[in-house]
Image (tube, rainbow, N blue to C red):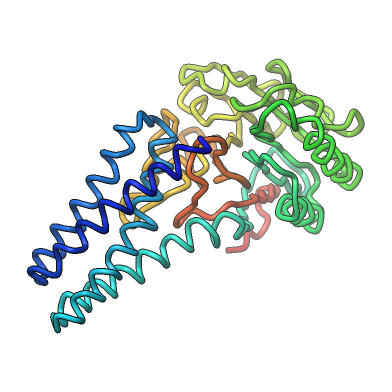
Length: 355
C-alpha cells in the first residue's frame, strides 16, 4: 500500500504530461475533451495494471480523477493561453477549479463536517417524550479531536438513551488496545450522563467490540436479544441477523419497540417493531445529484440507505450515514454525504409535532 500510491501517481502524472503536450499541436475544445477523457480512462487502466481491486481501486481512481485530472485541465489551460485559444483556456480553468473544489470538499471538508439530523415519531405506545441518539459507524483508526467532538455533541443534547449501530474501530491489532482504551473512556463518560443508558450491537468490521463499552448503564448485544429495562423495548441484532433480508422479529410486548442492527437489510424481513435503526451504508459516502448513493453495500433500495423511510404497518426505518468512514484501502472521502448523529424524539400520540 505504501508503494502502490506513489507508483500510481507518478505513472498517471507522466502520462498526463505527455497528453498535455498534445494540446500545443491543436488547442481546440474537441482536443481538450479527448485528452481529458483519455486521461480518466488511463487513470483507471493503470490501477487495473497495478493489480488493484475493490476499495483500493476506488482509492487510486480518486487520486487520478479528483487531483490529477483537475491539474491536467489547468495545465492545458496554461498552454491554451499561450496559443490564444481562449475557449480552451476557459474550459480548462473552469473544470480544473471545479475539480479541485470537489476534491477539497470530499477529502478535507465533508469527512469531519458533522451534521445533526432530527426526526420525530408520534406513538400511542409511549406516555412521555423520549429522546434517542443514534450513533453509527464511528469506524476510525484514531480517537482524536473529531471523535471527542462527536461524543460531546451527543452529551450536550442530553438524550434519554443512546443506540450504537456497530463498526467502532477499523485498525491493525498492534495499535488497537491504545485506541480501544480511548474509546471506552468516551463511552463510559457518556453512559454516566445518559439516564437510560447505552445500547450497542457489533458491526462487520469489529473485533472484540464488547470491551469498548462500560459495564454500568450499558447493554450490549453479543447475541440477538431484547432489553426491557428502559421505557421502551430494544432488540439488538447480531451482525448476521442484521444482514438477513428474511429476518423474522416478534414484538416482545405492547410497548414501543425498537430493533437495532448494523445493516438495514433486516428491514426487508418480517419485523414487528415501531422503529428500525441501522447504519453500515455510510449513506454511500459519495452521492451524486439526481442519482443518490453510488454504493451502499446493502440489499435495501438505495433511497432507504440513509435518512428516514416510512414502511408499511406504521414502521419507521432510520439509517444513519455514520460518524466515520471506511478505512484501510478505501478512499477517505465524502461527497454530498456529510457524517451525522441522529436524534429521534418519540412523543405520545396527540402531542404537537414540530417541523
